[in-house]
Image (cartoon, rainbow, N blue to C red; front, side, top):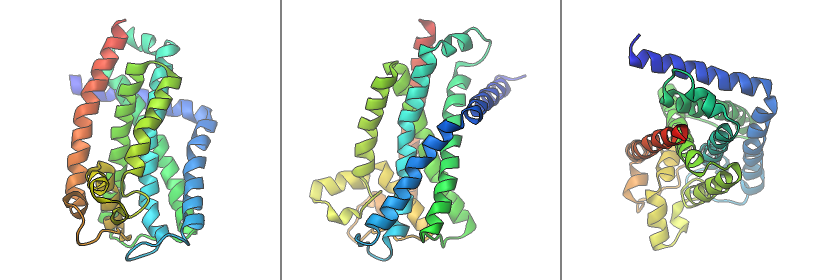
Length: 266
């Protein structure tokens, strides 16, 4: 069996292990779903009637933003999970097995993403109930979700790096929130960027979260809130989404793998 086949086999086994654990502890899935659903209802009903978005309804504008917010929150989920694995000795048990170190991280990040995808399925159903609609073609709709989920996977790898570096569940949870908040609120996730002043608007336009959110809105036929004077990244959201995600993966994956090797060597 080749090294690649071994990596895929080990990764699939560890993904299955994490998902079986989630199935046996359904409270984890419920807790991961309640907050996103609450955000859909709160933003859709409480803010939907008061927020004005050029070219459409705020309920349709906000749904892609909430999806990206959920993906960003995956940083803390994975970081806490990895730190807990280090603390309870699970990493030591994996180290004693003839498996790839990378497969351990793939198992954790992909299984966390699967949990998030299930939450997004529930959010989609609730969004439809409150009036959110998708008008794009099948490929465009799938493309929008693919970008959203790739952002979630990149955040999971970033969380794995943070968890391995900090090694403390309480500390990594705080760091995860510190990273997530500016990425989410200094972006086009919740409001049109035309409301921001000069330099702050430029920073938000170059935030990769803005590109991913705007790309999903375009693909799903939802209002983008982008004017003619918008910056280059949000006028070409698909291209800059792919570039931004490539940079995130190029940074997070090698850092997480090296951090795991250092942790396993102790």
